Amino acid sequence: MLESIYPILLLTLKIAGLATLIGSVFGILIGFFLARANFWGKNLLDTILTLPMVLPPTVLGYYLLTLIGQKSWLGQWLYESFGIRLIFTWQAAVIAATIVAFPLILKPARAAFEDVNREFEQAASMLGISHVAIFFRVTLPLAWRGILSGILLAFARALGEFGATLMVAGATQKTQTLSIAIYRAYNSFDYKTANYLVLLTSAVCIVILMAATFLNPRKPRA
Image (tube, rainbow, N blue to C red):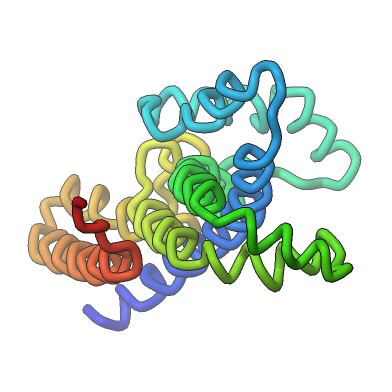
């Protein structure tokens, strides 16, 4: 059993890892932008970016099919120009997992940046340090616990992503993540494999959630 599960686990970790990495880059940058900038429509933009957290997975999958499907302008352009076909590939699973996990990085990142004491940044600015250096040497180190907590939650979410992934990547051997494997095993009445995969996924998610809670503990009430 372990020999057949290893490739599935490896693919799942690769997809979740890439999705978390991409989501982290954009989530941290956009979270910092929303925490610092003031402009008309800021709350609307934040709401739109948070939508994947609450939208049904089938709706997200439909949006993705409309965006990168073979009949979409982007899908046609990628195929005709570069021969790239995204639908029913593991890359499509990465895209789906990234979009689903992204809000779980964005929200904690924005909150962490908003909690940073601006006086430290102002002091660094008075010393002649550039804005980029202040971000990496002052702001980010002060906000890292909240951001890392969000990254762990996003990784756990990407690890268990199913609905949108099923729609854009399918349930093929080449795109079989843990969630897809559980789905296929159950439909094939292979309950032993399904139970094993469920327990494995649950154990990994419990460890990740405990780590996220440890990194971002609740502040005691005054």
